[in-house]
Structures are given as structure tokens and as C-alpha cells.
Amino acid sequence: MRTKLGLSPTPGALAERLAAVRALSVALVAPLSDADASVQSMPDASPAKWHLAHTTWFFETFVLRDFVPDYALHDERFPFLFNSYYEAEGRRHARDRRGMITRPSLDEVLAYRAHVDAALADALPDLPEAARALVRLGCHHEEQHQELLLTDILHLMSENPIEPAIWPAARKVPVAMPGPLGWIEHAGGIVAVGYRGENFAFDCEGPQHRTLLVPHALADRTITNGEWAAFIADGGYREPRHWLSDGWAWVKAEGIDAPLYWERHGDAWTRFGLDGRRAIDPAAPVTHVSFFEADAYASWAGARLPTEAEWETAASGYGSDGGNQLDTAGPVEPRPSPGGSAFFGDVWEWTGSAYRPYPGFTPADGAVGEYNGKFMSGQFVLRGGSCATPRGHVRACYRNFFYPHQRWQFTGVRLAKDI
Image (cartoon, rainbow, N blue to C red; front, side, top):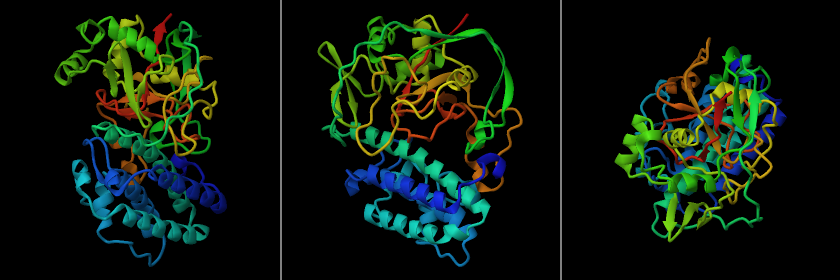
């Protein structure tokens, strides 16, 4: 476990981090009613209440149950309801049926969280290093669910005919349209990629290994809404020549003609966000596009998507704590960045790399070994974090992954080209 997760902080520092992470999750659901928190809008999404309970189940199961003598489960029924995909933990409620869990109520789930939080606070000073490492993993796990929580709430509200706003819109600061794309060139050669051994990393980020890059360049920013509107106007969704075969089949089958949440009102495009429906900001990064769309746009633009090794090599020169990321509960949306990209925040950036294990990858022992490795099939890697990613969660070697048709996350596009 130590080689995968790094040494955990001291009990005091870990307790502070745990409390902050757990408090943010509760703050994010504060605007929701019990009904809001119970509904599941699609199989890929989960109810807000389920996210709150599942992250609590993780701590209760892997820390309290396994390391605290005589700990009694808060409710014997909850492991079946709130296990996600851990086969080693036995039977579980079907993922696409989570919206049927109308009970326990939101208040009961919050009471469950309070019970587990109190037990963790009591246990932390005496937990062995292996258990503290799992608490640390649980904090990072919950931060992943905070982003999923926000994007699942957004999708749920988009399905409501009145399109309610969860938070009022942030004050807009006028920003000029960015200039033409600039390019960050790399001469190519052998580079090291992957987890370098500092602090925390998920198992799929390592081991560090060497790979060959050809001479290439990455765009100095992501593609904007205005640039995407030009792609649409040029028939980007009507002509098959820029699309992968699976992507074109998806466009036709699903009737796709714009990014998710976009609608045309007269001659203008609008988007739906957590602040309701508003006109698109042409200078802001385009988001909620699939891998299929990102790849088609790159082809239309005479470019390609970067490989994850190219992206990581370029991003390693930038601080991962910069950019527009999640700091507190409130308005969440990508913002214009006229000065060029810091590589982190605003939108996850699709790469052309399949999500597969690095050379020498081995999953962790026990049930937590199911965390990432079992999903290394049929998905593509995204890099960089988004406006809904908790600040401090990502790093240059961080690997996110989704199926090529999925786009309810804050996903965007950075171009690359060979030189």
C-alpha cells in the first residue's frame, strides 16, 4: 500500500484534511431538497444522496470495520445499498437502480455521515499506518465524488423542464476573445512519465516509465465556445469525413448536433449550467463534448488530440494548483483564460490515448485493488482537471478516464500536431 499511496500525513493533519473534505461534500448538497437528492437522471449518474452515502460507506468499511475493534455498522442494510463495484465486498444494489432508493432519506444519510465522522475522529489517533493510508485514499476518493456529484446534479437539473439554477450566476468579468492558437513545441525524445514517488497518487498513475515522443507541439490553450460554434456552422456535425466510424454512428443514432446542454435560440447559442440557462460565453473553453466530438474537431482543424505522454510532459512545467478549480460550494463553470492555459482547471482535456495499464502496473492488494485496474478497457484518458475538480486534487501524472461517448463531465479539447 505504501508504494501506491505514499506515506500518510500525521493523525492531526489527516484529521484536518478529512474534516475539510467531508464538510465540502455536505456544503455542495445544501441547495438540494430530499427529492433533488434522490433522483437518478441516467444510468451513468448517481443520486446526490447516494454519493454522500457511498463515500461514507468507503470509510466505514475499509477503515472502521477492518481496523477498529468492536466497531458496529451504523446500519446493516447500508453495505448492500452503497457499495459501488467492489466484488470482494459481496452483493450490491444495481447501479442503474440507485434512483429507487427513496429511503433512507437525505437527513438519514447525513446522520450516517455524522456517525461515521465521529467514529473516525475518535479512531484516528490510534490507527496504524495502513489504516491512515486508507483514510487518505478515502479523502481523494471523496474528492472524485464531489466532482461527480456536481456533474450529476447538473445533468439532473437539465432534465427538469424548468431548468432550475442551483446557484446564482457568478459576476461576469468581460474578457476579450483570445487570439489565434499558439503552439508549445517539443523536440521529441525519450521522456519519463507517471507517478514520481512524491506524496499521493492513485495506482493507475504508475509506475513511472520511459516512452518515446516524436517532435510535436501542443496548443497553448483549449478550444473556446466561439471556435466550436464555427465548427458547427461549417457543418461539423453534418459531414462524416472528420468523424471516426463509431463516432459518426453515435451522432446519427443520438441526433447530436452540438455540445451537451447547448440550445440554439434564434441566431445565438445558449448553454445550461448550475446557474441556469444563459448565453454561451464565446471566449470560455468549450465543455461537455465527447471524445468522438473532440477527435472530429481536431480533424476539422487540421490537427489531432495529444497523447497523454505529450500532455504530461508539457504540463509538468506548470503548477497544478493554478487555473479555475473547485474551492468552495457555489457557481461552477469554465472561465475564459486569455493569457493562455495553465494546463490545469476549467475543463478535462481529452487525449488520444487509451486507458490501459502502464508497464509494470500491479493493483493494490485486497478490495481496494479494484479501484482502477478493472476499468482499463474501452476508455480514453483525460488530463488536467476542471472547474469542478477540488483544488489540489490533480497533478501532472493524474489520469482520468471515460468512455468515448460520455460528455456529462466538464470535458474539453486541446489540440496537438506533429512537427
